[in-house]
Image 1 (cartoon, chains in turn orange, green):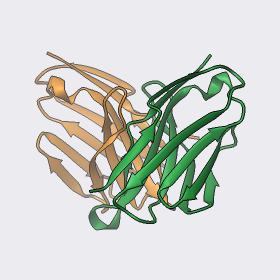
Image 2 (cartoon, rainbow over the protein chains, first blue to last red; image 1 turned 90 degrees about the vertical axis):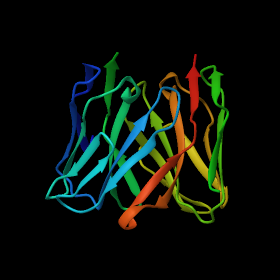
Image 3 (cartoon, rainbow over the protein chains, first blue to last red; image 1 turned 45 degrees about the horizontal axis):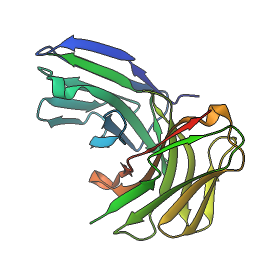
Length: 109
Length: 115
């Protein structure tokens, strides 16, 4: 059973466009994390959000944690080809993190 | 500095053969260690985690086992591989990030193909 549902599964956009990836759950998490993964490599942490309603910005990336700490979104402004990758959200609870199925983002030049 | 090593990077094995994937971490003591499996281009499934030597928790029933013989060593094994064991295996450990959250640092992964 997937605790975290990510949408969309695939996203292909033109360079300069904006995109949003969603991560939803019926569970409450102590923290919600976003990772980015390149093919053939392990995921790398982008951001951690812990407070309901929290918004964090990382250059062109904006992360938001829902008020109830059950959902999150990742928004990329003016996407670039270097943003291409698999974006994974993960919720923390009881020593472990559970991952969503991921969103494959392709930014075309 | 803290690093995580995982090997082998690539493995092709026949059905029914044994498996051993190894993971070691450096620069920390008593880490929480994890084995995840990833289907092609998809999310990560937690297989095992360990909070200390000899302490293994299994998340899903399967053909695999894990062991932690030393504080910074985590091994994933199988006695007889199945075709369905093919995948990308990732070892990880947790560090404490912002506001006390536990964040994962992953190894480079081991690609297993069972033929």
